[in-house]
Length: 278
Ligand SMILES: [Ca+2]
Ligand SMILES: [Ca+2]
Image (tube, rainbow, N blue to C red; front, side, top):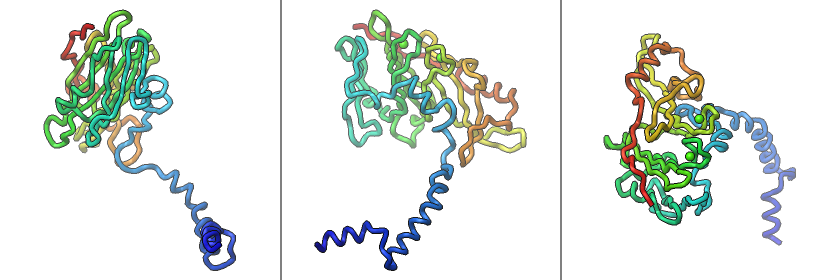
């Protein structure tokens, strides 16, 4: 009896005693300020999550993150198996990719080399043959070394009749919050690369930092820059401590073009061109 009374007191908002009035006042206050709290823009790291090419709806229709797959995903002769790895690692799960039941690639081999921080792991069709290819982008976990700037891209490029080609690239700064959507709707997914470029002298004679978005497509075994695949690229967006998605007008178009030509790799070449034969 005492217990039930206690519970009813706790959940009651109808009491006419002093506590009831205080509770009512708090509820009214929450109802008034709640919407403003919820709608307050997130201030902090620059605005990437909801930047147009990253819209969640688009992401969902074009790429499948491995973490959303069942533990054992089978598509034709390809299977992608995910299981628990090292709990303390930045990549707590291991991904094994097999073709006709034979292991052709495992994220374990990257972990052994120290590339145990995964930035992206998903399935997207890179060559437009209708078969989803497996893409893994990872980097070293050690944040304070020069090696921390190196990223490792693995593409398991499927073929209609033979075993997939396993392509591997070592490059820089593919670690930003990226996606691999089909940016021009031709059925082939592209790499949307995001770099933070710092201290560029702008038209106001001050130095500013920018997010630079560029597009790479798979051509043969190379990732080749092709910004013509979507209008408005390359895209410079000023780094601000608040949401910002507007292309900047602080750097002239010509300076932007020159920067991309002189500073950004125009192609990223696969290191392991040979397919793993099965
Ligand atoms: Ca494909
Ligand atoms: Ca495309």
